Picture 1 (cartoon, rainbow, N blue to C red):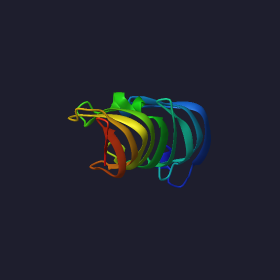
Picture 2 (picture 1 turned 90 degrees about the horizontal axis):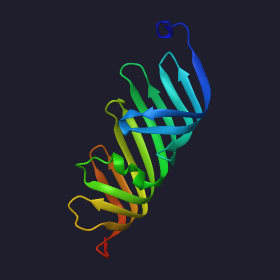
Picture 3 (picture 1 turned 90 degrees about the vertical axis):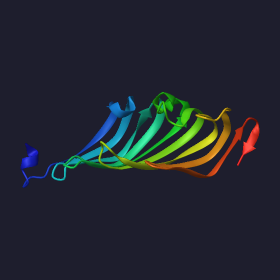
Picture 4 (picture 1 turned 45 degrees about the horizontal axis):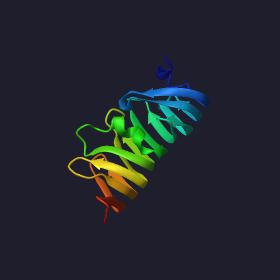
Length: 168
């Protein structure tokens, strides 16, 4: 009903403490969410000013905006740090990476339609282990940064060991 009242603007700001939210596409739940959110009903914009919580038991923080008007759009930045192995169950079964373990920092920028977002980001590994489809040995001591988008994965600074030998 408020969306049909163009002469009245409703803006609200809320502090969120110890709440949770389900993310069906990740089959995961954000827990212990704390921070500030704002909603402006005329543009139908939800702004995450500063939101902190836990995702798969790793700390996560997010900020950005979600436009709820048609067509819906998002512009979010999400950062998390922790044990990379918590994501193993969510890796694509036919994808190149079969498993990962070790410390990781993940920075993701999401934009566009929520149903088909464009994403780009960086995964920074420290002494991680990877199992890659088609590679007969585990990749170990993976250290460095991997940049990614919807379409590409690149790295200019990644070192690792395969079969006891360093790979450059």
